Length: 188
Image 1 (cartoon, rainbow, N blue to C red):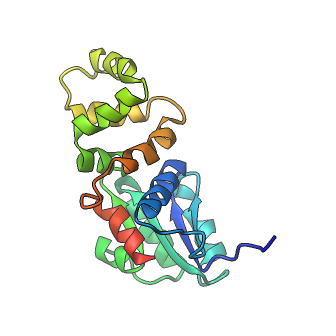
Image 2: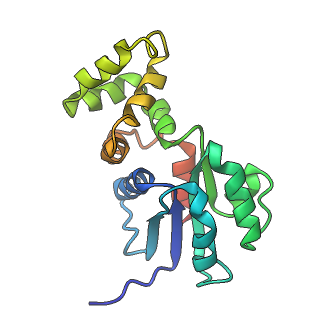
Image 3: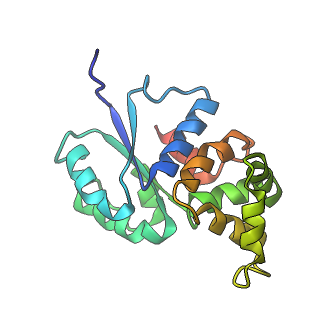
């Protein structure tokens, strides 16, 4: 069996980001493995430094790209500069380096791109509409925007974000792909 030697590594915060990006690539007819692109879940944004050290200029010197949540942007910027990838003082500079920011996170991006009704339909198709309605009826969530409730629902049970990542991408209109995902895939 041949050893996989990537030419590029995409660093993402978690497995849901990884599944979403891989699903989008597939929908666009791209085989990232055949392109020798490794999408790597870091297990959280705070661990980016060692990954940049391993795969960046001071390590294997591979082409790097990545995706992070808005709340992790400043940490990513500092890590990119420390690793010697170049200036990352602004979001535009980060993007020039191949690193893109989700507002507020990937689930928020997908919910906005799809609309609440489409996300609810996916949840209904998965047999979890009752669980969503239960969350929506809780006093702390009543009266909040449906998009907020959906985002919370996706994060309430371990593995739910991962489970829904590709399902949401699968129903996404390819002309309405969230900008960070679209730009990241185009960068590769």
